[in-house]
Image (cartoon, rainbow, N blue to C red; front, top):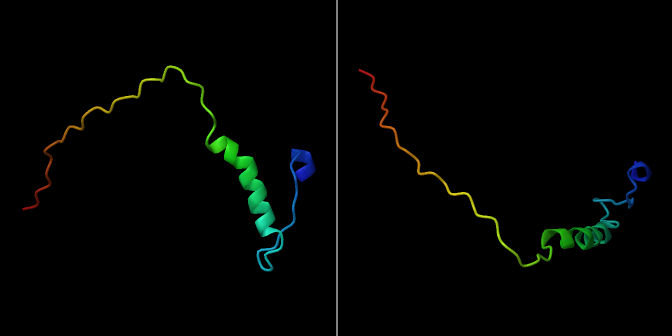
Length: 63
């Protein structure tokens, strides 16, 4: 499946910890640029405001 998706395949073993650190470091190198991308300064979009919640005085009374 790795070839059909054009992704890298690394065999690991949780039992013996074979290549676990290697894969973790590789994933961090790939993911880190997407987590904190460099943003260009510019106008920011307005944040939506929350409408105030209206409390309803509904009560359940059992006689």
